[in-house]
Image: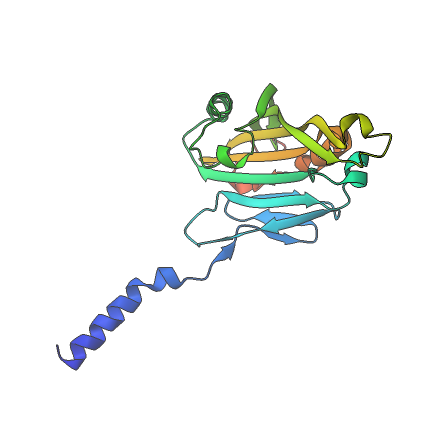
Length: 237
């Protein structure tokens, strides 16, 4: 092979590898307390007491996990604070993918997979409900004028606390205290321009009401780009 052909081959190889070298981009941008997802064309207002995490994705691909919000000034159960033990930080997760499934079909699949304690669905497996989740109910709602489903679940778990056996408060337990507890999970499912979007919020049962109020306020700020809305869906029509 002569020098010219070698150069042409190298140029061709480099051209074929350009997509692989393309710079990754963020799934969303968080600035001035507003989260903006350019691929899904939505914004959310997030209070300062929530930490926002976004991720990296290839320009031509869609990362299933779009963003995660973690509460900063969360409360901890008194026994856990004193003795140590597991606790749940209030969290919001946003997922999306191209899918022909309707929101109701996704919910039915989620319920079925929870009953079987098994799933191969790449969103359902991340919701942390498969092993000990329990469906509580659902309602049909709208999010920024888009039909959606709000489903409520609880995730049961056992909290183990190690107390001092000599302490009269814990002597009857032999030092080991076992509590049956659960988290409450709100799952919102909607369809937007062929994208299935799943928004999950969860919190410990004990602190659910005030955290739920904060989450509801965040969710109420959800806005999609009006230019993408079907005719007649824009505000004022």
